Amino acid sequence: MNRQLAVYVTLFISILLFGCSSRNAPAPVSSLDNHTKQITRKVNISGSSYKVNKGDTLYSIAFSAQKDFRTLAKLNDIPAPYTIYPGQRILLTKSAQKQKKTKKYTNSSKKPTVLIQKNNKKLKKELDQPKQREYVQKQANKKVSAKNSNPNTKVIWSWPAKGKVTRRFSTKENGYKGLQIANKQGASVLAAAQGTVVYAGNALRGYGNLIILKHNDDYLSAYAHNSKLLVKEKQEVKAGQKIAEIGSSDSSVTALRFEIRYRGQAVNPAKYLP
Image: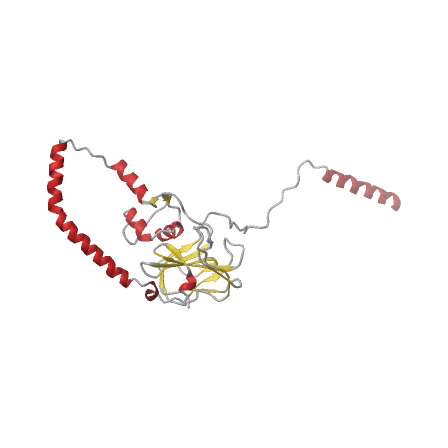
C-alpha cells in the first residue's frame, strides 16, 4: 500500500514540474539594483541657450556651461541675487542675445536718408571727445583691476579631503577638469576656502550630489559625487568646515571630484592647493 502511494506522489510531482516548465512566458523578475550608476550622461551644457529645470541656479548653469555667472546675468538682464525659475530660457552666448534683439526691435524711422546723415555727423562731432576720454579712463581702470586681481592672493586654499589622488586635471578639451580624491564612503569633505553655498543638489548630470561654493566674484569651487550634503544654499561656510561626505553618487568609484573655476573656466586645483 505504501509503495503504491509513493508511486502516486512521484507521478503527481512529475506532472506539476512539467506544467511549470511548459509556460510560454517567464515569470516577472524585479531588479534589485535601484542605484544603477549613469556615468555616461552628459556633464556640460552646450548650445546658445538653456531651459531652466527645477533645482537649477544661475551658478549651477554657469558652472555646467563653463561660463562666468556674471556674463550670464548680464546677457539675460538678471540682477543680484540672480533669481531664476523653472521654464525660463537662459541665453548662453552673445550671438543668441543679438538674434533676440534683432527680432524684437525694428527700425520704423521714415526720416529722409540725407537728414539722418546730417544728424549722425553732428552727433559724432559732439560725442567724439567725451567717448575718447571715456575709453582712456576705462583702459586705465582695466589696468588697475588687472593688477589687483592676482589669483593667488585673493583666496587661501586648503585640501578638501584626505585620500589618494587617483585622477588629475587634464588640459584636453574633454579631459578631467579637477582632482579625484579617493577615500572610504562617508569620509569628510571640507570647504577648501571660506565662501557661500550657491548650489547644493543633484540636478547637474554627471556630478551626483554636488556642492558649489562662491569664494569671491572670480572663484568658485565644486565638490561632486557626495553621499550626503551637510549644507544648504545661501549658507556661509568657513575654510575647513565639513560640508559633505564622500560617496559614489553618479560615479563608478567612491571618491571626491574637486574642481576650481576662475571666472567660469576650469583651472588646475593642484596649482592652488598647498
